[in-house]
Length: 143
Image (tube, rainbow, N blue to C red; front, side, top):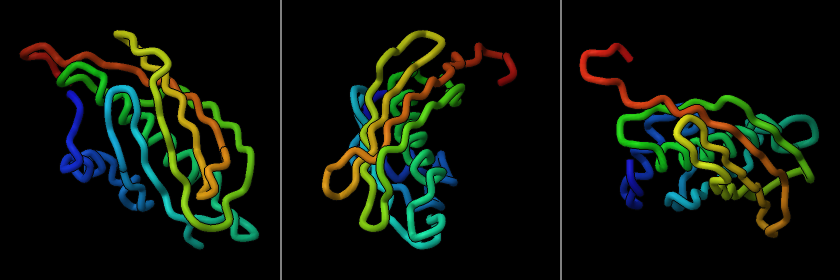
């Protein structure tokens, strides 16, 4: 795909309607790093006003998948094969900033590490995910 410009961030999120529904925003996007943000809201919480782990995993998966999308050949597709999450602290307000960087960019898989930080720059969680890479369909092939 190539590195998107800031004007392309909204278009990237249009590819992921669930991310848009959650309110995830992309801040930067390059082959070596994608960053995004998710604001705390009561609708995304579990008991006690704590941001739900699923919301944290969703922002991590979104920015991680964008790292894969940006580094793949034009026309290729990706999907998450595996994701491992560790949670370190609760988020009870503010926002979460996700920073995703590729660990391995191969022809068939891309492995991405995403770190999640609170507004005080404390590590909230750590996610490592593996993305499958499906090459572009050849002319006349079904996708």
